[in-house]
Every structure is written in structure tokens, then in C-alpha cells.
Image 1 (tube, rainbow, N blue to C red):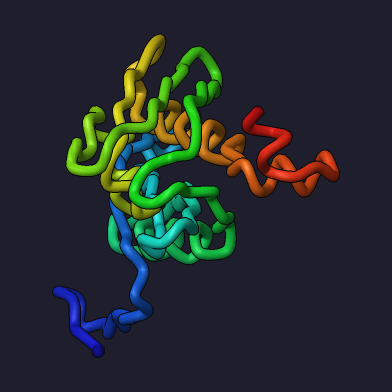
Image 2 (tube, rainbow, N blue to C red; image 1 turned 180 degrees about the horizontal axis):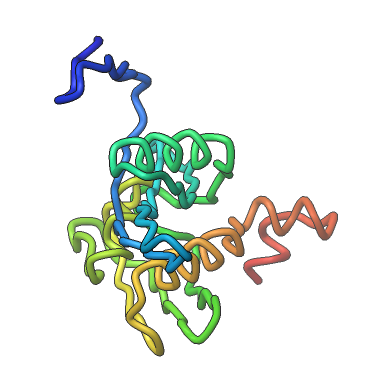
Length: 173
């Protein structure tokens, strides 16, 4: 579907079944000899709602262009997450910079108990039952990246058994 923006340029919207969440838009100003140059940095999380997710930062002189760039980059940076039903297989701690996000599995029906940026990540990846706690920084970009680091570290019992060359019963004890 093509839409015209206020300047008459057409913007094409894709319907690719992905969940796109805008985390933050920052206005960045660079002071130069002739004055100030303003640009925008948009941070976007893209997920398929079934265990794949990616995030990226896009920069441009206009906000919609920055969001489009970030979305395109995030699609390229997508990775798979090991899920167990509607939750995660085990407790995990994701760290990025000075931020840490503790993620705990929850029973079905619990819902997503998470702060703003981490909630967007969980909804995009398709986790509907989880408890999280964010420690350290409250910078949305660092919180999202910490949550993604934790999701990358998740492994199901079957994956661990395959890596170790054992059966699932030997792993679970």
C-alpha cells in the first residue's frame, strides 16, 4: 500500500506479518561552523511473534526515514529465540552496558510483567507469560539490548542434550 506524506513523496508500507515496535526516537544536534545540524535516531524492535527478533538504530534528518532505516536493519539482524510454549525455558540474566534484565519463566495466564521497553521486546518475540526485572540503567536502548542478550542465551533441554551428546532424561536428572 502506498501513502503520500506531507511533502508529496510516496511511502510504501509492507505487510510482511512482522511486529514492529518503536522503542525510542532521539533528536541529535551537531554544532557546526554554520549553526546546528539536527538529525533523528530511531530505535526499533522487529519480531515475528513466533521466536524471531531483531533490533536496530536508524538515523536520518526526518523521523519517518529514520524509522524505515531502523526497521530494514532490524529485519536483517533477526535471530531465533528458544521458547517453551508461551514462556521461556529457564531463568536468565541479560547484561548490556550497566543494564541487566532478569527474566523468569511464568505459568500460563500470568501475562507479560515487564517495563516499557522490555515489554515491547517480549511482545515482538511472541512471549506472553514472563516475569522480568530491570536493574541498573533505565536507558531504553540499553534495556532492550540487555533483554536481547538474555534471550540469545536461552536453550531448551533438547538443545542442551544435543550439544552434550546425551538424552533429555540424563540432562533433567
